Image 1 (cartoon, helix red, strand yellow):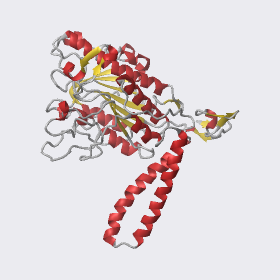
Image 2 (cartoon, helix red, strand yellow; image 1 turned 60 degrees about the vertical axis):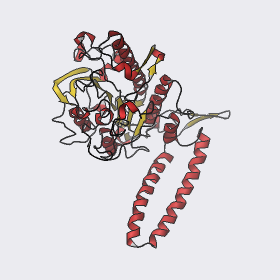
Image 3 (tube, helix red, strand yellow; image 1 turned 90 degrees about the vertical axis):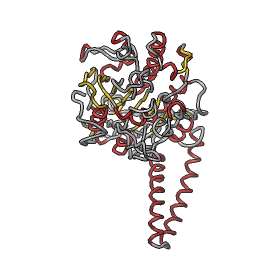
Image 4 (spheres, one colour; image 1 turned 30 degrees about the vertical axis):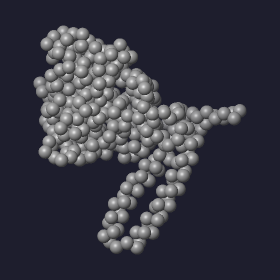
Length: 447
């Protein structure tokens, strides 16, 4: 496809009576006679990983399939969403649900291994003195599609992920994060919205402050760069090797700053910086989802992992009339009253995810929307929370995958299909072809 219309600057604004109004991205901003694939309008893949602890109410309680509130039914035109997933109805054509997934890497002390192994499908080395597992799916993807953005990846949580109930004897290496950069490098999940905002848009409470601070930081880095170059000329070879390691770090910082300084936010309505963690959990969840949507829209990152509530949390949900703490409630003992409350909590989180999808679906990009160009994995690494088991795992994939995904279906897989088979499949959708991931045995057909 070629575009032949006149060209309007991407940075064009409307001015009048002392007021300047930034314009959103318009088709007229695409240069004339340019192939769409060569412009900023072409869609770029985003990936997101949204984790919920304590499983979901499925057909493996003592009440059997009659109490299953997670699993959809039917396929293709007969695909029907479950009560927990009902809020995804406007986006049903993008939704694929999976039956019979299992992750044996999470088997062990309750809650301890669930978060980190969700995206690794690798059993941690329990004999190691520190963190020892493998790189997670999100970080492998970030290494492939995230290097051209300011932040290769973003790791977020709705609350602190350090929960004594989930840390266990091995510490919090595996219960407090979804993301490992490599085998020994767990990444912290940031739950303070203000810190997230600063990472995305820079220090300062408003655009003027952020611009002033950015200029000051730039001049300091320039001075450091010149001094290090001068120093390098006078060093012995051995010291030069040490300095080279330092310079590699400086270069990465400079790369990110250069990307940040080139950010075009003229079409983005950037809010004022948040004050910090919010007292209202519901507002906290919504704000972090809004920041994720902004980060995707502005091209600040293409890979996000979101720990939507902590493993072993004692969080209450008074805003949906559930005053019980989530973790104790998850030990439901097949009590119908407790099961119904857990369904309410699980439904709430999907509803917040659905609102986020609605924002993403309204953002035009290329010949479609940002949702058309996204792959979002949503689910848990636990099945029946009362048993702490890992089969079958509640799992859905949402998005168009930049043309690589076909949704609107529930795939009933062979019994005890490794979760890593889905990870291997998603890597292929992201352009990363490899033979294995974790304990995978094959890719999933039909996705």
